[in-house]
Image (cartoon, rainbow, N blue to C red; front, side, top):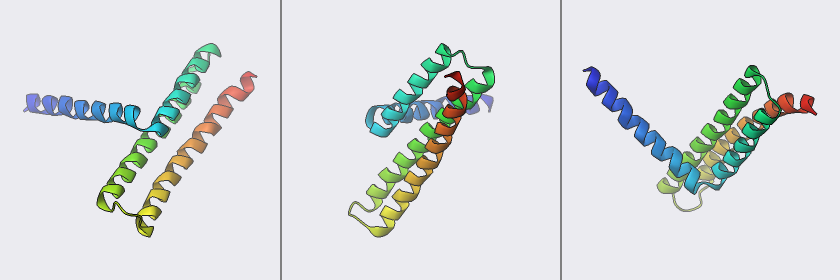
Length: 119
């Protein structure tokens, strides 16, 4: 029983890693957000930010990349279900993009709270 559980978790991790790799390889928005995240990690080391600041920054980066991935999935699914332009599909895509905007604004606020005092 335990062996099945662990083998299932390993298989699930492989699928998740494949999905993360696909996002990094194929999605320009995820690539851009990942580049920004990399720069912020370097800035964190340069400015020697505190453990709490690292936690906030890591959570903000994870939130943005996660929501960006979900947005990409919604867009792919919507395009699969209805390949032509459709008002309701466009509405769904706008909502998913709005979620990314909320996450990005929150991340910018976190970044400003961390880095503005360093200057």
